[in-house]
Amino acid sequence: MSASPAAPTIRRDIGDDGVCVLTFDRPDSGANIFDTATMRDLSGQLDFLEKEAGLNGVILTSAKKSIFIAGADLQTLLRQAQTGEMRAFIAEGQRVFNRLAALKVPTVAAIHGACAGGGYEVTLVCDYRVASDAPATRIGLPETTLGLVPAWGGATRLPRLIGPEKAGEVILKGKLCPAAEALNLGLVDEVVPQERLLDAARDKLKSGKRPGGQPAVNAEPVQAKPSQNPAPARAAEIINRSLASSVDDSLARELDAIAELGETESTRNLIRNFFLADKYKKSSSKTAPGEKVVHAAVIGAGVMGSGIAQWLSSRGISVILRDVNAEQLDRGLGNIEKTYGEAVKRGLMNEEKAKEGRSRIVASSNPGPMREVQIVIEAASEKLEIKRAIFADLDTKIDDTDILATNTSALSISDLAAQTKHPGRVIGLHFFNPVSRMKLIEVVIGEQTSDETKERALFFARQIGKVPVVVRDSPGFLVNRVLFPYLLDAAELFEQGVDPQKIDDALVEWGMPMGPLRLIDEIGVDITVDIAATLEKAYGERARTPTILTKMQAAKMLGRKTGRGFYKYEGKQPPPNEEIVPLVAGVADLGRPSASPTPDPGTASPATTSSDLALRL
Image (tube, rainbow, N blue to C red; front, top):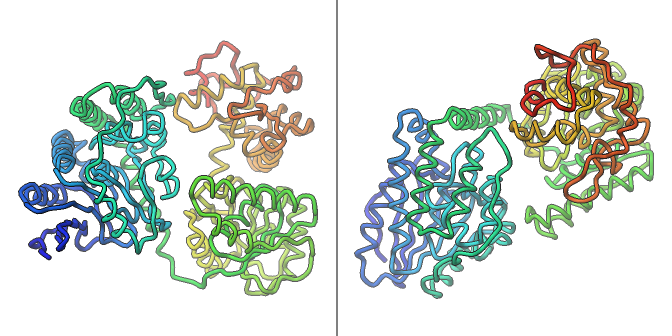
């Protein structure tokens, strides 16, 4: 066996079988990234490999515990975006990756851990890709979420590998896929246990060089959703032209696109935003370590309660899910079953893990004591009197040292704490729907919440994989205080005769992931009315609930959960619900104050332009 001389970021080992293993191992770091040093080292390794006789294959792998290669160094990209040096850096990466693609021996990427952006693009120039089945292994091209495009061959080679439609889905969404989902999409060729990764890679080398990718085909053009972020549209353009072009021509388009995007303010802001979010995640994890929660209880089996119970059980916590309504309890268990089924389908876990998660949930309508739990999360109806009664009851049924939390989205934590003998242990833990996908959790500190309870709650939030933000106990807390003026104004516009689809399309075009009326349907019209009532009590007329919402609530048009709201939920693209048109007749109040005032508040018509609507909201 021969080994490379010391290289700062890449180690080379050639075995007696003639297989060279290049191990990425950035010193003094838990992550591998592509910066100028790593790119220089890879180029140096290729200098050797291109001349080496008797070589039978090359394997790329990583020495890191949970990261293969995290992509390009964003600090470098942000600096280069400001100095105009990005084009040269990206062009050098394209040249180096092309040299790896041109090696005369077969190549395999053995992927364990996060494999993102440039980290995945370097695997695309390999003949084969084998991934570990570990939860840490997540694969994808997130560049568009940062205002960039995959420019080291991602937008060129991925369409050749899996076709433009699937490539568009991966690149335009910018999400990282777990290994099983990556296999289903064709991003990797095989998924194996981590301990078999290198053996599986060696087996792939026996297949020799892989034939070229897909030939040019007639396919439906990939389309990016309208957005203030220009990157998805640029990526779609490259994908749509890639199969009819040479690799070199397509790479040139990638280079032009990323260089031009790097000069835009939106891209620089998106990269800065990434760093701010990352900084917050790191700072929020600096609380003192605490005792892990093993047993929990959730009170209320509605959408939020069942979602919280499912998430806790998926993180290894045993959960008592309690609801006095047996039918609601059955519906909640059905929701949990559906969420686990979707997780298996998406490759987020296998059936065995889902079965283990389900087995951790015990459903009960018994109102007896719960002495074995460490935390109780109340997730009942958003009615103050109901929650007060629950808290007074729970105070007598759990140990004095247990945390008593509420998932309220707007009600006073201090008020609920006043119903107990130990108000210091009461805290707000406001999850967001769907719990299985939303990372944020508001940790709401009441007037008497103890520091110990706060620290334990923060530790618990991190334990279950959420990003906590600590907020004061004020109506609406942070998220709903910001969100609801926007939602209520959208409902007012509908009252004034503006088509709901037009309202939502305008805001999606402006850059929102979902329109405000569609979001009300997802939240639930009844929950929206309850939160709005709390805000109106605190902030007066400017937070008044639009009449259309109370009429929809009375008509049981509560949104997705009842199949009807502003839209009818019958298929993938729900149409506007024409049944609410009679409800809106005569309810508009053009003189009322706007929740989000504009120079001309309270005025809108069916002819209002998309730009007008976006500015109004």
